[in-house]
Length: 553
Ligand code: SPV
Ligand code: MG
Image (cartoon, rainbow, N blue to C red):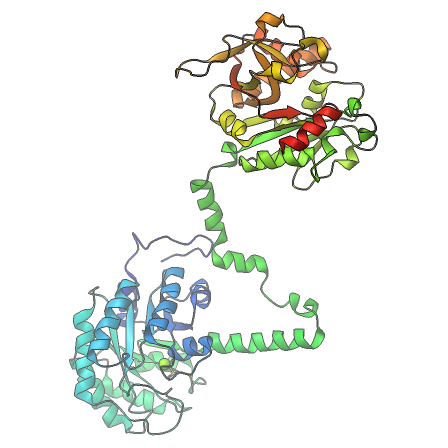
């Protein structure tokens, strides 16, 4: 079985069942090893180290929860921990099920729940509930043999997976009853259906364990826990015929030592500097948590950046008509109700889900320093026009991209309408242009002539297209005013790139305006769609506009 700690398998589909993998370990002719884990993280580390299976230690799980190994954690709390451990790994887990959490009936329910969480097996010990850890005190009372056999049978009858294992733990040696009692109990438990016997000892020498193994003569697999007889060479267990050795609590104890050392040092030094080199990096934590897999999944399931809409805001000009107000800042930074007008504009864009906003700065660029925006500069702002500015951000003209003048404010619904509109290039046009200023010649304005005037109701296939834009359109032909907001699809952006290249070639790029760009695109055969709005926007060109902007907000 192979495992990458980077990518978590979402299921064990295609792999042998965990229960079967544990059964194979128990029945293998080789000595196999289970390593202790007590939570999802330690389970991953056990797997990462190359162990074929995990011992979910009752002592360690209790200690990790800060409670005693005396059934203080409820069995469902243990189940919760096991679920994390099982989900985090694809090697089998043998659970230390203490005494089975009650009588045969509790055992039945526990086995079913463990099966549902893909736990490979349970080990129950022949003591009384609430249990006490085997290394505490002397002469702990043992369970009645028949009662314990009933519990084993109940567990086997309840397993949902045929390969699930019930391991019967004999505590006769721990309680001082000796080899004969241990063998009697092991025999009874084996006959009751246990898939293996765990024989436990608290001696520092393995003598009684080796004696048991010899007498038992491999009647069924035997599991040992060399915690106190740790000095014994592992080959001795191999030679004596043990099936599985459990390293029962060493991750927990290692963690206690490491955490203690680090906590004490940081406390003493009032700094984390000294410990940094000796502890796992945050990157390591992310790797163990499987963050790489999440990043892959995000690519698969979240809308890609390719679908995200970006915006370019043209904000290089001073706005001389605003006089002294723009002496020390460009007009996009003039305060409107406590915030620069540019902030109002970008907030509206943000509300529409647009986060990637590039502002083209020029005049007093250092003042244009709002957070969360990208900036591109047109340092030749006073001798060039809008297209020269736009060309500075040509690399951002891709995917779906909005282009907006930096001095406009508009209601949120206008952005929604624009986002929903079809077309490679779509302009927002205000049909009520005359309400703003009935005299088309009073100032330079982006007036438009369209294929059809504004109507209050449209059929689905009524697409209005731009015919021409400019300040000099004959009054009877004016259908509205472009509000300074346009949307380009990826191929709309390509058309703009081609036109900018053409302007570069013919020398008009530096002086060209957005009006020139749209008119040239139309001449080149590009369809430009129009959506009409009826007011609900403004641009800030002069002091009167500024006053209106306060009202507008
Ligand atoms: C455990 O790990 O919780 C065990 C083994 O049951 S021992 O602590 O040795 O009893
Ligand atoms: Mg235990």
